Length: 223
Picture (cartoon, rainbow, N blue to C red):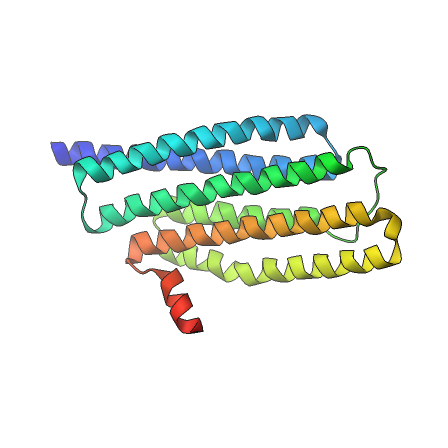
């Protein structure tokens, strides 16, 4: 009977993590929409959502640490709780990156709109797709799907490099819009960092399922 209760608590922990992921995903999409539309109201919404993300993170961490302390789980259950704690941190940092996009947006609200040579919507959709896929891998317990998220990272790195190069060129050609172009560079970087956190989530899913610390293996391979 105690074991049944423990697994019910694990299921509740997973549900809370999925709810946290939904909040983080909403923050990213709303922040990018605020930037593209120069929408002050959406900026305010993201800020309010960020408070919900922070609250959810604290509650989830408390529950996870309490399970570790009281239940002393072994093997795959232990790895799951440890993965939840790390994923929770990455989701909170995704929310932080969304807030950074909002700050960039507020800086240009009073400026006349200019067309920048970057498809921010495409970069944002790619980053959001990585988050959704990583969370689906968690939901399904699918390490192979998690592998696919990590494989996507190179593409968004390429998109970010291209955006930075194009915007730096624009600054040289049109210094008068340098502030907006610089903000664009920072927004593209925020989206790339969001994708990095999605890749981290996928790595933690792999750790939970396979018991393999992929990050450590990568660092060893680079030495």
